[in-house]
Length: 572
Image: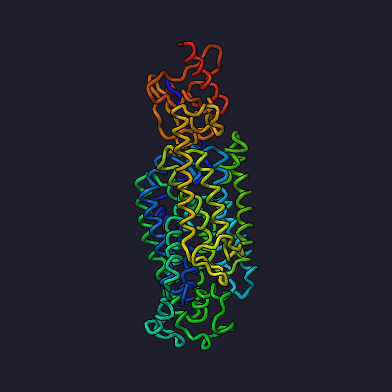
């Protein structure tokens, strides 16, 4: 006799199986979207100190983030069978700590969605001459609606359309814009669009580059692609393919930005100020298509930008809402919530994230600035936490919470001019006039946060495991004072069977359902102990054809655990 505990379908992104071809396109669009191409053209056009090609770090930064993510994290996360990025944190550090770590993840998704919606607003403002605010609101409504009804499939298949549109539309616009009478030879204007890197800005440049590379890894929008891959190897391969795709997709945007910097806008139909003022720079990509290309090319090119933006919006909103529904609502507030309830909570979260992103997209001017801002807290707080939970087995909740608090405080004290947060700590090279920290303080903050996690976790781990501190002092119950019942936050990596209990041994086929509450004995049952057996007088699940019993509700699961404990005690 054996018992198979079957996993109910999840509403998260780990469940659907999508074809390899679609997965390649889907992973390419982890970072390639409206904000990516619009922001790239914007920073190239800006030129000078702080702009131009030398400061266009997003393409290579996020390409390297996909490479490092594939090498160091994709295989491990996919092998463990997690469904969301926060699963390992809540499994190791507890539900409440996982809930705290959701905050920077949510803010990152909101800022990214805001950048996406701002990109679409700029595009629609040029195409149909409507206000930027109206355009952002309309695009947000559209993205929310088809995300509600499409789920991960809406993300995957709109991503396929997006890549086709970008390749066709943007590359089609390049030769026409390049040969417009108002555009000078870009080789003669390279001093403008190449940009400048002054010696005092070297620390800032390095800080921004590291932020994009390592701040591009701890994202649910990335791991939803990884965790829905069919195998760990495929997750890695697709990450590498996507890294190459990031560079390829940015190339036409770089060229269009250089063309815009080489154009005499007084010779075009542009009715705004010349030179173009900073608040209009985010419009530069749709401006090139509208005023430097034939009308039929404009139609196709701006359609490509719009498709790219809409595809990016749904993936960002969906990833944030799925993390909230699964890792916050279900595991902290309603552990016995039904699948239908979780789905409705996720739909409500989609509305909430969409509204927050819309507000941010309206109030912040620079698309490229939003692009950096979205990775800020993720890099400073989440990246050291992800490294710790994946690679350092002795880290614990005490270290995680300490690192979280220290990292957040140092980052806020460093200030952020984009959201009008003044700097309390003036690092070396701080410019009070521009409110710019030229010292790489974000990287320093990340390293301090990581060091805090290690320096707090390891001594406590040693002190408790060697009985130098009494067991009851482990107030977070994460080292030695672990309760009899624990929530094992693992999902099936195959999206199917969860646990096979055979006559003489327990064979794990996939991972443990996160809704289960099992005892330590059950979690250690792989060592060859006797299978779960029912005690007298206890109702067990009815047998199925072929000798199986399917356990599909919480009461029966807990009954099996109690039976196992009873059988253990009777044998003593």
